Image 1 (spheres, rainbow, N blue to C red):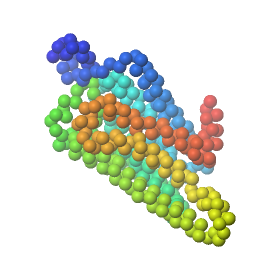
Image 2 (tube, one colour):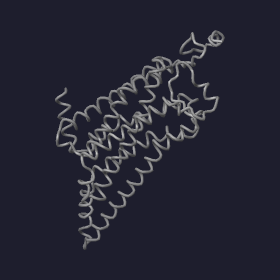
Image 3 (tube, rainbow, N blue to C red):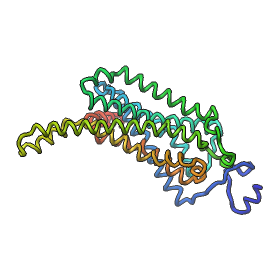
Image 4 (cartoon, rainbow, N blue to C red):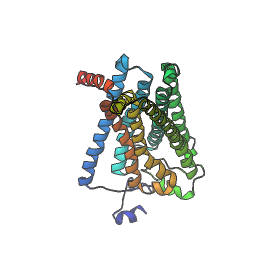
Length: 328
């Protein structure tokens, strides 16, 4: 069977295996620029988030509950860039997995865990912003360092349970159709999911946290609008209207707007992958180029976050620059 396929100029990941996946050979003019592009994304992701981690850990004035949540998110993005993205780059461009089945399971489980940690971290950040804007008098008693650390530990533990438990328990294949086995070949490393497990994972790891985050930020927006109306109602003359607006813009927490942008970019990057895999996991994974493009769109989010921190937070920019100059 292999020889007959080889005569048709079809290449395989493992020519000696009867269960080998077909290999798509990209030309050098396509492969080299893609390696450069994806390699650049990986470098920015790893070193950008590493600078964020070092900056927050080094400067004691940055040891606040909000920054600890940012630190947790940066650590997640760093691990994604250092551990997950390099093997994924080779898999995407070589269209084959050569690192063995055990490492494939570890890779996919860790990938699932880190993506779950990201959305749960954003949920915690939304809670932090909710108390900071809507209940500022209770913020320092509700969002303490101890409470924040506990929430982060629960977030990582729950994500590890979901990521590794789903694969090693075989839950991803429960209720699967028989024709999904045709995509389980030598040289493949994707998390094949049945419709049941795909719906469960998407609901638990994306839809419910996304709904929770959107509700909180809508609440924050309503409170901010109410504060604006309250300030404007105290202005007796039209001459002072612009001044009152300026004062409102100063009182509105800039961190909330920036972290809201972080949440919005996360949804823009990861929502296409979750929605497509939720629609029909079998058809989705049968289009490898399409699925790889969507998953790299999600990975790109981890490289964008440090740029947002560095350019949006004035109190973070100076320590970030200090760390950068000390290292180089």
